Image 1 (spheres, rainbow, N blue to C red):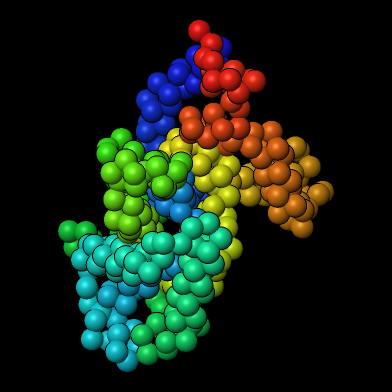
Image 2: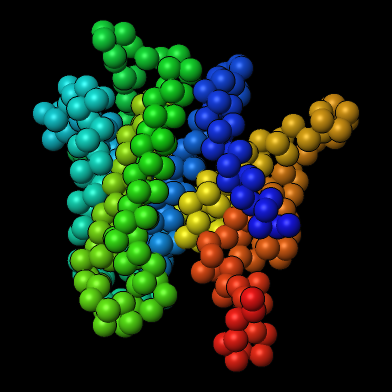
Length: 347
């Protein structure tokens, strides 16, 4: 029954979801919430490439997001001192540059960390994230330091795209490109190599997988996706500053990946959408319950948010829509293996 329900959902959701997304949310607040959800979905899919598919714990992921945003801001706005000579680019010229900058940063961080695993890799990537933030905060001549930088809105066919619905459709296009690309790569030999490395790196190497190059590709692809999302974030906000790229953002995105299901693309999309929308749903909870202004949920909103996360992870530790390998690890009986570990498979 459970498998049948999942198959039905896998057929229905891809048909209904695009129609719901194209039916533009009404009002500026709904638009802003929808764009926030889509931003986190895209970031979750990018982090899932390195953490979920390749099994590389990257705690500096938000740094690539910041690099994409700052690259867009510097190339479009110009900024102070050295950055002045770089300004004047259009947004459509800055987007591939931002992707390239973030991807190159992923290459640089990937090269010296190829032989590291687990906690050691996490510490190195965490250090990289802190270095990136300190650089953005202190390199006044390029980033304007803690004061941040203003970013112009994109221009298309001579018209400035300032309306929320215009930016919403741009982001929707970017998210579709990201999902389509990751889905196709995941089904290719590269995706199978990532999963092989995640499951057993030594066995993957003995099977002919070029482990260093495959790991490096995961770093670069995840970083490039974060750079693309960062470039949109810069023009959406119209302003970039170091506090937007705190370490806590990486933790939040990682929680979305784990909640949805590590390695599962539909699961990550669901987990990111739920955790991004949940704080806004809790904000309007008193009105939904008919309490109006009688009860202020703001002081308890994050407490409820954290409690909901704990309950969901206790209920389904493998994630809401888990990957088949992850489900088999946590529930061997459901995978068809005999509970006594004999390896016999039920009919």
